[in-house]
Image (cartoon, rainbow over all chains, first blue to last red; front, side, top):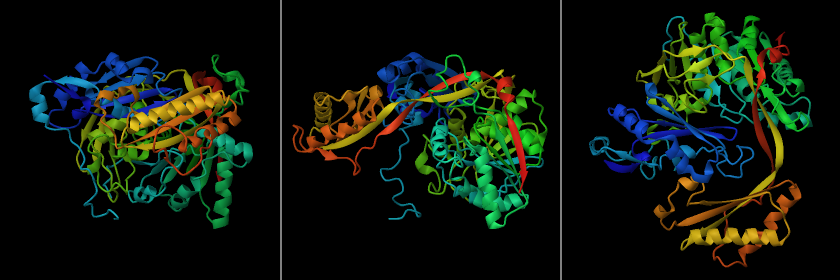
Length: 135
Length: 448
């Protein structure tokens, strides 16, 4: 087992409703999707997510599992500083909280990590050689 | 153009919010959709539109609507497509008037406009949920209507349906019920249609926008294709994008939208059906197409969701940048000095918020500070709230002078504009009896 950040193995998107932030966490498409989803289901509990966000999230965190789409859903109450139009945060809708979730450290079997390879990351200047880029 | 399966209804998601790009409509039209749906109302858009209407009774709809209709009306008049939109906002009748006037000026005629009203609950305060603020305090309160009145409008021959607050996904369900003749208790089909709406309602978000995966590999990200769906009579749907446009539709992009702003995926509450997302299958067909099968539904609840908002003081913010070395320490020090100066000036704030860009502004406590190296630069953003707008507006006077007289060296404005205060609102959500709301729902049809 090795300890890695979720960003190495998963993707996430966040949304908002009032003062509630919701996070969708997925095992990305690929040959090892089932194994990665099993890691997510085992490692990423509601308690750990609540602890990760500290005083950013004042209310409860609830987890829902949807193995049919290799996804976990986290619903976090009182999570946006009073809700989008009331919050003093720059990220008043919590658009970046999906990314914040990917900071969580999880235990992943070494063989799985070896099969997955390094975290997919963009080049430093993604469109530097794109034909359409205006430079 | 992507080939259309026999008997399928082709629906396009042409708008995801008030302020979205009208340009992608041209690409959507190359796929010849039977219906184009424009979703214009986020949770608080009605607060903005309410302010518009307070200034001018002929306003209260989303004002970018003409940019969409200019492109759509020729196809509508030719009978090639129909348009459904909640852009009517707080005043669908005013939107209809604007359209008939403009059509007359341009010599356009031969189409039918329907308006759906009755979502406003503030005008019927007896309907407000018990734990809601008083009608006097509320800036707006509207119920999220379902697809039924929209189907009524389509059955009356409407080519253009203008509504106020209708559940986003229900805007897409309506044409499917109308075309396929689904019954209002055929829960699995209603759920399948509602799910298509959910996948299409946020424009680029299902076609590679906000994609947390390999976003840098999405083709032509400057010309995003908005989403379309071919929906068969049995509810099976294929999600795709215009062949001529950029973007990406695959298992990852569609799944991210599937869960977006959903609470329990096994019980997604909508006005017309409770959708179960845990039974469905998403199949990546390749070529930017994903097929959705196996959606199941449960009977609708007897209530509508109602959302309202009340004023909650004023806020403003100011950002200051510091460079290396010790940028984070300087930023933290500046915020504490600023806060003390505000207190010494006798300004009483209800809330004070400090965040450090370059350190943890966006991720807050999720950041392990031990892992943050000395950043090249840090921007400290200070935000404050008070009931009195004057107090909010006076704060910068006690922060800006820090530029020449504070210990942290290198105090640099992070922007060019002076802080401008804005009014805050708190959202309230509740449930309201469906039948009581429905008694006030009206569908009005007009031939232009």
